[in-house]
Length: 291
Ligand code: ADP
Ligand code: MG
Image 1 (cartoon, rainbow, N blue to C red):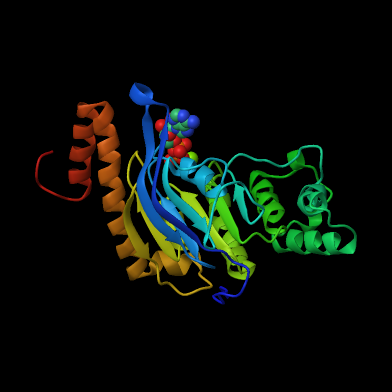
Image 2 (tube, helix red, strand yellow):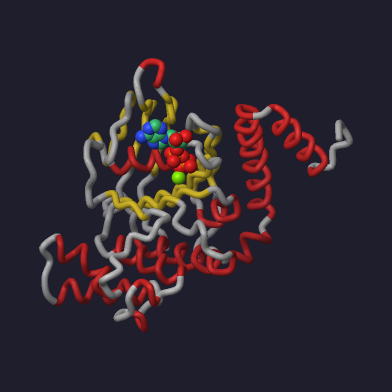
């Protein structure tokens, strides 16, 4: 079950009025604008927003790779000023070392932190088992399927027992069936991890299936459009969520907002394209207005 004991290891992140602007004067580009939200301790918060809206930029700020231009990011009450093992990021791109086996990759973090001997072996072996790669401990990344590589990456992050796991579109690019299985696998991992998770996606079904709380983001520059609590019981089964009326209502609400944002981004570049999308959406929603 999800760990909700505030004394346990999960961390909380508070983002307050964060703006991130790159460049100066006439070259200035604001990518994140006055963004505020809380990533609650031991919950799974999902951020969904259009491509190019500034989500990965927010990840770099949360991780401490970059600093906000204005506003603040607090981790357990302390300002985030640099990267930390407490806040680990799993990116979409594979970051496994190709010259190391699955075991080598997973054990690398704890070993680099100076941990030695049987505790590293026990922790790495246990987490490799949890992600279902026991038979592939001695395999190299190129010998693993895409889904297995993603699971090895999850294991590699989780073995370090971070307070917050940040996952930036980790399942993008996987085929639909593998992606569905990965989401179920990941959901179980979250439920047993006892830490805080922040998951980024552009996929509404993935978002609703996984989220305790959903942040629906605007088109660029990144702002919070809506926060929705997804009060579905855990452990969750995909089939149950798909059949759930409440989940479907949330999905429709989220889609309406995301669609509005997508139209805006079309309109920025090309009015004709925006008109087309709007007309299409009317037809799609069954309206008898304009074509
Ligand atoms: P998302 O992850 O939602 O697809 P990103 O955060 O990757 O969005 O990018 C959002 C926008 O921020 C893009 O238009 C990108 O060009 C811009 N951007 C990101 N990093 C920089 C940077 N270092 N300098 C200037 N613009 C940047
Ligand atoms: Mg991104």
